[in-house]
Amino acid sequence: MRMNVSVANGEIDPEDMAVLDENCEYFGLRRSLLMENAGRAIIGALKAKVGSLTDKRIVVVAGTGNNGGDGFVAARHAAAEGGEVSVILLGGTDDIRTEESKANWAILERMFFGVRLYVASDPSSINGLRELIHNADVVVDAIFGTGMRGRMREPYSSGIDAINSSKGLKMAVDIPSGIDPTTGEVIDKAVEADITVTFHRAKTGLRKGMDHAGEITVAPIGIPHDFETLVGPGDVRRALKPRAPHSKKGDFGRTLVIGGGVEYSGAPALVALASLRTGTDVVIVAAPKSVADIIRGFSPNLIVRKLSGDYLVMEDLPLLKKMIVQTTSVVVGPGLGLEEETRDTILELMRVVDKPLLVDADALRAMSAEPMLLKGKRSVITPHAGEFSALTGKPMADPIKLRERMRQVSEAARDLGTTILLKAHEDIISNGQLLKINLTGNPGMTVGGTGDVLSGIAASFLGWDVEPFKAACAAAFVSGRAGDLAKSERGYHLVATDVVDRISYAIKELGS
Image (cartoon, rainbow, N blue to C red; front, top):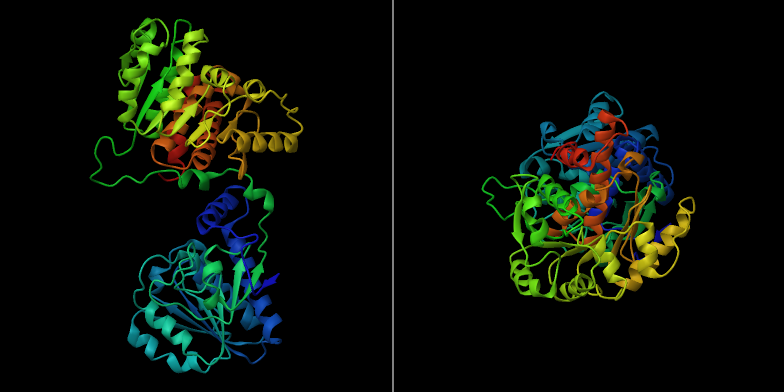
């Protein structure tokens, strides 16, 4: 598919592409295979443009990341097609960052007669190669791709100047180096390409950076469209908040859990413990006096504020409003009960909350009286099929009718103006525009309390200012993965605290 006028249709944000790339690896589609397919696609597009590569002088100017790795693969294929190929690495060989790129550089090092290799780590090295670049029939820009951020440094700045000075055809890999891959802005300077080969889908920056991109070719590299719909570890990684050495208490969120009642004390405690295990600094449970001390007794890690009555009442609102001011996310619903005044208080509470909000359990039942209450708020609701039906007034499709369920969740999310995380064998997450499915988790997690664990995880991500849809996707994966780790040790004989205890291990698997 070639586009010369617009790349708006079918484009993808570079952050989403990075998530997809990591998820592909998780689902068995290796990065090394994607790199091989990308390199072949570059040469396929080049042959479509110039015909035979026999005796063509081709220079690949490569960076030290995966974009450079794509260029290494392209160089190998160009040599196999009869081209006279040179590769200029901008930076030292020890600077090559990924295993896939290192492996493909090592292959080139063994192509004694097919490819000439140069290492240029400073402007003077680049200047010594300017004639080679200037006289090339084709120059391939494989410097940055979607890895470009901030101002240009050396030797990349001189490398871009050299590419632009070439009289040959200039081809950019994924996006011309120097263009912000998200916004399309040129911070300093950028390659002025005649043709850009972008992979899987056009990157959003190409829309504004088309003056530098030339003719745009979108090349498939074997990523199934199904994988864009599946939640994976990439979704979790972008939701995690990095910890600086000098972090202080509160930097990683303050979650308020409003829950508990005469009948239920465990639910809000599980939410709070799950949020703490995910990484929230401070979690406070606001609970009716009938259960506050019981909740406090579950763990010394819990901070509990006692409300006025045996269940949530209107008199509690002034105190809750003060507490909300000091929080970064709020969970309302677990174990609150269904007393009439409690339902009215929940509804009033949701009207005044101005922080990221997660609504579950009894709050969902209360919300069925005013289902549009969350429109315009940063919110996530986590119903199971029965709660979904009660909230929407429509029966949920049978679990085997996954596409129909996806349609129902997407439409309901759009109508209600919130993000829905439908808890099921295949979790379905949608904000009405985007939709994903999570496959982690197991039948042992039907035990009571695991939904509360999910709420606590999601509350942490919301408290880190993660967009509700992204927070819900990450929470679904972590919760299910923690459950899978618990099942691997205990079989299906789980309790909710087993899942809580393995949240940190599920996240640690990501190297975080």
